[in-house]
Image (cartoon, rainbow, N blue to C red; front, top):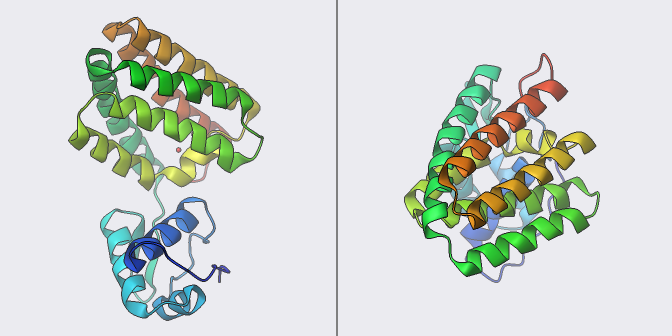
Length: 222
């Protein structure tokens, strides 16, 4: 069982428990076949079972946990076909968001994206730091579309396969390619070139999928 820290919240306990468990799951801290036991998690976090139960139900509804007969809730394991499907949907939705970002992005959005591109150059080699700055860039670009419902759907899909997206950024080659992709996306946004940014988005998402399967041949797993 994972050694989780006790929670001392500055916000509603149910939200803190949810975020703590989700972060642990998406960072790969739980074994894929490990049964998540409500009472054990509550004891480790030093909270009652109620917020843990609520968090687990929420994570199940988001497709991060799944119920298995005689096992209870475990971390959802995606097949290759499921991962491909999610990436195809992401490709379509993120291309739509990028097209609208060209029309709706503000100067403040562009300044933020420029800052994040620079952070990609300066970030440490810690895998979580690398993943986080790339995640923040994608989120900021999507939000520049000014289509919050669309952004919410994209983020839900991205969270489901967050563990696999981390894998695709492990190699130096993929990290360099992702940085290049993001710089090009930013330039297309600044040029207000809708056709260019849509084409770049398609290529970027497909490249991420290829990178994952290239590093995980034969096993389900960005």
